[in-house]
Length: 468
Image (cartoon, rainbow, N blue to C red):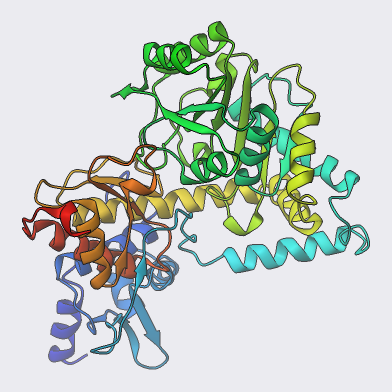
């Protein structure tokens, strides 16, 4: 090989570094080398990465490892490959073209291996092979639902332990479950207690049903038991809603000690707790569910598959309180819809029983971790989050308020959710929730995060709320 070519190939691979002994599979480490080099500027748009055989020889790995690494990098949107030409760092959009990046939707990221479409296709093929089309064409067929619930009981075992799950119900998403629970447990004018910042779907359902929503004070560990008791005594409320594991929007997780105190308070005051737990399976270190600490008494436990598997499944499982048959809940669900799609329930069951669901969670965790690491490297402001969470909570500096910031960011082609979208009261802290799962790849996410960080550093001091 001519000396000039050797020099060129050597320069192409200057971004490589030694493998880390406990850094994960080597093909993932190579993909991360590419990502880190793009972030640092060592690799620029249009730069060619080395031929696979050249890089394999330089790093001392087999060709298959590099092939998998480049496939991983392509799936992340870092490089593009062209037959006969090689692989290149992906380019930017054409000048003047508007590319909007939506960081408002809290959905899990697609696995970096690009396997979601294949998993869905294979799963549906299996469902159609195993079931008569007539059975999949009815409204919530009882045998199909019962079989899916049996699979769900196994799926929920790590979260619910030895709780009796025979009354478990399935519904078309947690939003439907929340509405049905509120409708069955409260009447217009009743009070619902929750955190000051909470799931917008809860606020929507409560207001639609004419309920009064009252925020309960918290501290660094979450809702305070003494504040919960005081709020209950003052309002006469019988219902409490909590999202204690990787809270939406604050990304805070209530520690086990506080969960025990809340469980004891709920039982002592004979309150009904709605424990919404959609993010548990993304976190390997989640504390025990509050439902297990109450022994299932006085507690509705909600587990959605939308945040840990795939939003299009539109499937959630609800365990009513101990000794509650779930009939009122079922009546509420029937009043709102005709149940879940038999086809989607078949896919859910297949994924759980075949182990695909567990595998998919691991892939999503891995991609979420990579996106969180990307956010950590690009955002210089402190954030609250979790290493495998799918959003982060960003408190704004004093020179920004949330309305001006989200408007200015919108003008840059990036959308985030402001704190007032989650607030029970009109006045709230100036902060935004940044959802990391929506962008199709890490390159798009990185572009949005750079814009966020640059805007945070701008100082546009005004009397902000007077202008919005």
